[in-house]
Length: 199
Image (cartoon, rainbow, N blue to C red):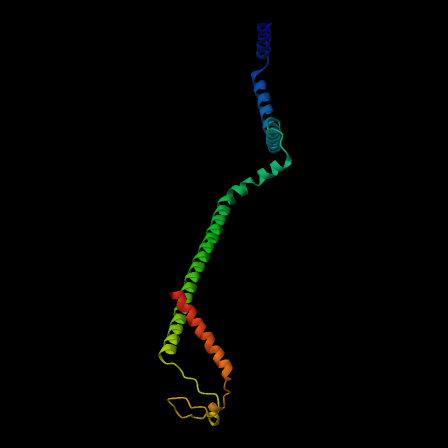
């Protein structure tokens, strides 16, 4: 069947005039070129649109289903990637400055404590010196207090080696004779008893 069809086409082409065939082919090619020039921009645009649509459809079909916020994160990922080193550097500078401030505050507090201790020691030494000087002055130079009573009340008395004999010594009452003898007897009896006990 194929051989017979080819033979028939060859017989038909042989019967057609070659000149007219070539002219017809040339006219078809010219008309096709003119049509192609007119349709080329529109066709190119359509082909680009079809390519974009096909790529988008392929991405949507092949990509797993994700929520909407992930798509928004992807859109901003480029900015985040670019700004990440700057943010990191700024954060490190802030932390370093904060640490430096803390260290400076600690050093200043330590210096202030040392200065305060030095001032306290100097003050205590000065107070001890003042107290020792006051005590030394008090023991070395005693201050005599002045008499508070008036001079008119002071009366000097003459010095006497023996006390004065009272004038009324003879006026003393004498014991009666019987009482005196009773006392003497009591004393004699006491002495006798003590002598007997010794024997």
